[in-house]
Image (cartoon, rainbow, N blue to C red; front, side):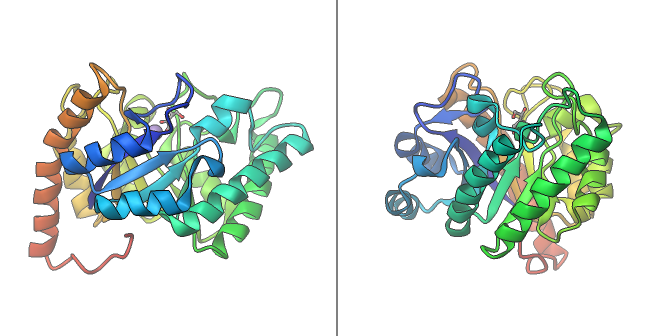
Length: 286
Ligand code: LER
Ligand code: MN
């Protein structure tokens, strides 16, 4: 298990859920705090200069854990289940470019709120539209060895795919080996019956996890039971990324430091426990 942190470009919209803004200034800061990965929160692939990013990552011994796409939704209201076919094609085009970038960096692209709102669709119409776009993109992503991960998001932000159970049911409908789940424990605290047990129950679908506390502050600043979450993940043999996606409160540097100070010792213990149990080389998520 490794720890990552979400970072967006300096010009990201105010409602972008990231701790840090600015790759050049924040990747070094995150590395110094002990993070091993950076989740690139992007609107378009051309926000990244691959050569420059490669140099920056190498210099600070960091890797990209994932490319997340909240801004594709927030900036242009582009949705997988948009009723207008031209808009759906536009989102596919943007995602193909992000998938190309992920082929070089991280091999994972998330689908958060960009899946869309129900609006006038019935659930079954929305699912059909989603499956169609997701299958098309998964087939493209397979050629780049990239996995798409669907993130259930709580009901106050979106009305389509709120719980882990709903996410898994839709992933089964997409029926592609590179379509997986990205649970976020902040959303699970609102939508799911339990957190740890539910993660363990669906472990075969889980490729990546977002961590924040109950109030979306750094883990340790709210009332989620992280020792139970780690325990359940251990028993389920999870060995992927944990990514810190928290509010930059009281300020980005403090929030990032609080999360690292709380999570890194727990992750160290977790990895030691895995090694003691002879599990370390079992999984190849990284
Ligand atoms: C994004 O990862 C997230 O958790 C949502 O609440 C916003 O897109
Ligand atoms: Mn999230």
